[in-house]
Image (tube, rainbow, N blue to C red; front, top):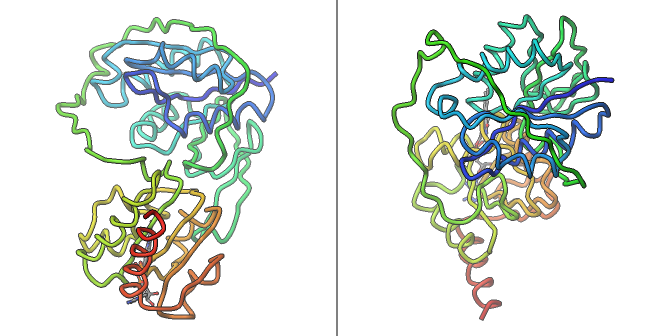
Length: 320
Ligand SMILES: Cc1cc2nc3c(=O)[nH]c(=O)nc-3n(C[C@H](O)[C@H](O)[C@H](O)COP(=O)(O)OP(=O)(O)OC[C@H]3O[C@@H](n4cnc5c(N)ncnc54)[C@H](O)[C@@H]3O)c2cc1C
């Protein structure tokens, strides 16, 4: 029977990331044994939620070394665990830390590492999307186990199941030679409302907004809709209008909200790959030929700077 591991990212208060729970849900659907590895403060507490999403066991360590030092200690601990437990497949999220750890682990185990997977079909088969999501490619993973696959966020839903995980303490000594890159500072981004990836409604702006100040119109709409967040295209992020944390697309975040409102966005394939799975897409664009309108459920052909103030006014009127 196959053994699938999920490398779990867990916050200090024991909350796994949404991608971790998505990967567990997918791993469960592949059959076999599903286990998780969580390293760093919060790991043990996180086991409850990991168990609820399908992990039957969690290899957990509360050691601060995993949070204080980049990648090396985690890759070392994982390599030791792999040699003892022999998993067939390990799923990682496409997050900065996970990417580093997966690459180092692959170098140690001689495994095939596949990044940017949009689906996992079996312990040795995964899928990715190329040309901005216009072509889907099946990939057969060869080489020694464990296969290592990095999964894009929001590739699958996260669905809880009945289940609890046995916590197995990780007992691995980390040698000095693995403590080269230390995190010296951490900055917590101050944000109100939900994270872009978790928002039910995403209001995204592009170059058609004309100037950075006009993003305020999107913020005004977001402030009226609970559970909403503002996103952007790469063009405006590169122009410095808004921060990279708002970028949606191939080189940004993937979102799958109930409603996606594209304001002054052309709908380049690299943007679409991060939002086209949204449940309902509304697009406002002055060009009736803009590609975004071809995937929109509701298209408004008009000047976004004239339409949006009316949207704000209408929402406020309806809310009284
Ligand atoms: C390797 C690579 C990776 C990339 N990754 C990403 C990514 O992750 N995310 C991403 O978004 N892009 C990405 N891009 C860039 C992408 O190709 C596009 O250049 C970008 O998405 C365009 O952004 P935009 O829609 O804001 O601008 P534009 O393409 O300039 O579109 C502006 C739109 O606004 C409309 N408009 C103008 N004025 C108004 C108005 N007053 N009212 C209404 N509509 C108006 C125009 O008709 C036009 O459709 C990537 C490109 C490459 C090569």
